[in-house]
Image 1 (tube, helix red, strand yellow):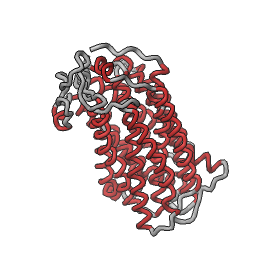
Image 2 (spheres, helix red, strand yellow; image 1 turned 90 degrees about the horizontal axis):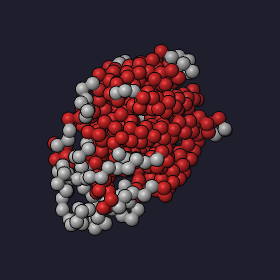
Image 3 (cartoon, helix red, strand yellow; image 1 turned 120 degrees about the horizontal axis):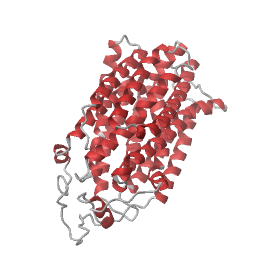
Length: 455
């Protein structure tokens, strides 16, 4: 197997640049979904159920995209076609979702329409997001992977800053931040419109700058990893005959159950850490708008101007979290041990969650969100560095990374199903859910030290 060449900074940058636009869409969804559904009339105790669809779509879509793209080859590449289709669908849905309350539908129909749009939005975002991770796995050597994923983390967080700030900025320039009952404000609607435009432009940039390796060259650099010719056959680059590569776990079929059965222990141990981390962030995304509104503005009434102002300020806090992530991501490679960096980052994030209910001034809320940003940076960079290193020689990289996405989606589904019950257990106070999130990150930090890495 040939050694993958070192790539210049700008080639690594171009591999992930489209992530900037994808993350704007993801940031708009993360910061505004609870706000949108609360504005449409959702009960806080039912709010976590709306968050089941995004991870459910992720766990269904990403393994399929990973497996299909492992077997795909077109003149545009094997990962890029899925990236482009996902982005195109996301753009259309981003123009429809925030208008759910403006269609003259009854509240039940509005909720159903909003849920359908949310399902399509997260399906398309997942479809657009996964190929970027696969491109790094395909084309970047082990020595540069930490750097490549750090660049991806930087672009991810930079996109988040833009997406999170949009409602605040559009309110500042004069768009209305309040609307009729059950209708989403213009500041949020136009945030989704502009985010959709940026998304498609960023994806067009990546697709024009990145050229994936042809089948024979891909196989030379990736050894036993399966690949497909334009006709769908598996190619041996040495003699161009069709056969299943001997080094591939699970053979050419890439059966998911066989792949999971043969996955390295590190795959599962990293997944355990992921479980606690993503459950914690699911509770933040679900309840933090109400938590900030209660702590700073002393209201959780979504019909008030104060609540909508709290929604805008939460977007600013998310942006501060993202900027903290950008700064922290540059420090992660400087740690002598990636597990130490991972654990310390999660511990800082847990402290940040626990501080949110104590910060009654909106500017004091900046500190906990900076700490939360440390955990977010590590969650974007460390797991994929660890798992792709552990998977070297196993083949089916795209399918494995798609399956690994289950460690992101399953925790969110479980947390969403339990959210209403846990909310009642903590006195139906959304601010107390931040303590729950902090505890989950602490457990995740402890579990990091159970991961065994290659020497």
